[in-house]
Image (cartoon, rainbow over all chains, first blue to last red; front, side, top):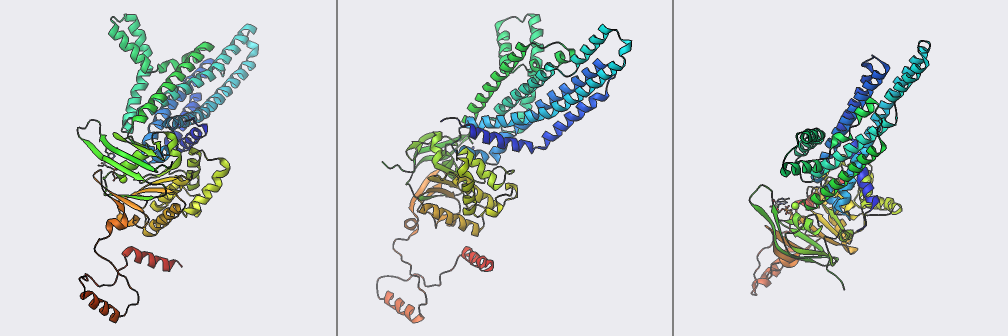
Length: 289
Length: 283
Ligand SMILES: Nc1ncnc2c1ncn2[C@@H]1O[C@H](COP(=O)(O)OP(=O)(O)O)[C@@H](O)[C@H]1O
Ligand SMILES: [Mg+2]
């Protein structure tokens, strides 16, 4: 059976409509928007710090809310379709289960991309306005500054403001939440309740954020014996290292992000997404509908 | 070579619930053969295994033992489902879509071309009597309307085989009659229909053949008339017969070895009465 893009698009589109009607989606996005805007009222010590704080809070809010949205929105997709018997009428058509799962996943990614776009646009606009007013301020004080001092101040403002690395960090946030969505889909394919799926995902989220710290700690301690090492390697393999996708420290600190790091992370995300989607399909094939 | 439409061979289905000891045997050694163009009614009380049978035919669940072919093809092949339309039991579909959007969604799943889809949607909405409700969301539909849109989505790709799980459940008598008429018109066009019901009278008029399922076993199977007919009895229904004629007949019968069991006026069913009453007020 040849995979049909049209069928996958139909399922993804319908899923997106379904998700866009969820109230939780608006609540989360609204909450993030409020946070981003309110961050501009904080800390006015220096231009640089002001921009940094805005970035820190915005990136943190976008990161957290997109992850939460990925888990909450995905968790109820399959259970609801089974409850409403949608899954029967869809799978009774010439639709392979893989296409059904993939369509659901792409629908979620669509929702995540739209939410990210909305939050990012606001974040970038806020930052840009701050940056402009900072530069304006510098121009006014121009007489008091030495030329080299002036150029370094402008450079600091530019690195603290909107730049390419900030965009890269936002794209990685999307990659991370797409991994979370694929994992959630996988768990919900065998879970018997939404609570189970969401609880399990809370654990995946925690492990994914703590594993790099744990790894560093254990590496320093020189964990002895292969059983422990194998166990750690297994955990690291099954649970994606979500913290790795969080580049806000570099972005805020103005440390340039090397292009190969971004490529590596996107490759890693693709690997986990494909693996989890395939696993979700395999589980779904076994399921008694 | 012509194939049977559905061939079920020695199918057994055991449901195992995780973390629970006992398993449910939903079907035991079921054999079923349905010819092309036939309307077959699967009857049985709740929990007798009707839905399980239909889901196995559609490949939604796999049998523990046994095999199923559809028009000669193994039913686990996705392509075998191009020929089948399915109405699930108690289906709600996507509540947030309108009737027409629901049909469009299923048309895309079946790979119908864009140019054909719109005409097909209008045709089907008319066929199931939902032309006026086509732009309303399914969340506003009544149970009967949901069954109709369910029938329409099952028919969207003009399948050769239609599988209906309790098509008349929860539908009022007029709606149930409409559904039966639709099935009859599909039969005239050569569509094979397999339907299940726990209310025997609702389907008896359309079915060529019925099978009676009880606790996962096929207890009886055959043409309705031969199943229900009492071999050594005959029923005469006369119109405008005078009492004299009837008395004469009775005397004549008494002089033979035959025995008159009952003489009475045939009664309309409550359902027939309902249909007659509601029809006269409609016009
Ligand atoms: N998914 C399932 N898991 C466990 N048992 C099931 C499942 N589906 C149906 N059963 C059991 O199988 C039997 C047959 O059910 P079903 O085919 O739905 O009957 P019907 O459609 O005739 O009412 C019932 O005893 C039911 O409890
Ligand atoms: Mg049933």
